[in-house]
Image 1 (cartoon, helix red, strand yellow):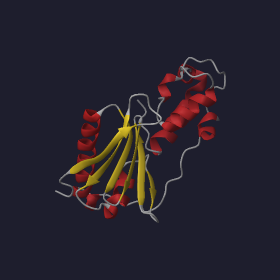
Image 2 (spheres, one colour):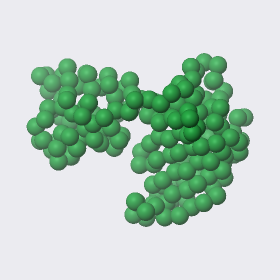
Image 3 (cartoon, one colour):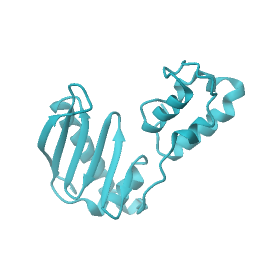
Length: 178
């Protein structure tokens, strides 16, 4: 097993989330050698090979890994933190086990920008997605807190090409469409 345990060494309230916590955890080993492989596996990651550091967002959590240290924000509670760490350990171990079949990505990805997505949105600011404007919706798509299917106008016949294009962009960038 590549990573046999992760221990929480620090926990405190998040300054940005009401009632949420942030943690710092000690990994059983330095995983810098695995970061390019994780970068290939976790499509929404931001990998800096010069540091080396690795970060990504999953749900509301922002995860950062450097060497043998992991920090995570916006955890609901201690139980949520332990559950997340178990899932992270599984991802790390699966990635390590499948290294031979993964092409490492040794560079930073270009990050999606809201305006790139906004170009293909209806621009009606209809609020059917739950956001005040189409630009706000595009911003939430980029940060992963909104899903493309929430825009009802994109499902109409005249917008189907834009929907397909947005779906392609998001999928290629590693976003979950549903």
